[in-house]
Picture 1: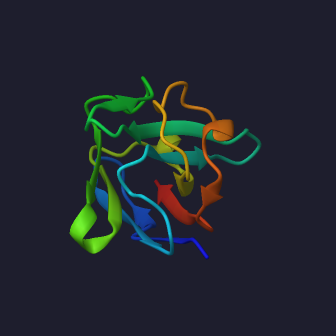
Picture 2: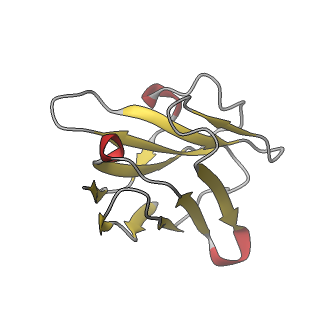
Length: 124
């Protein structure tokens, strides 16, 4: 049974930082592509960042230079460091993983089959 649990969300002022965590348990290979998505009110869930098997990363243009995706395999945890937060970053953030080996691209929901419950990030 695979489970992803996000934490680290909260409320911050514009310009602030948050570090989201995604703890992964169960039979899943964390070397496979993993990612972060977000959903703002009234919008569809969209990709934020992905981390490929070879360590390469991809970011949505709106977060490039501000967000950093990483993982600690020893802790079975993936992270999203978010700096210089803006009000438009307000959303529910979800971590995602999958059980097959392939390139991350494209950064779409259909590329993942396991999801966390989400953590709220509010920037004012």
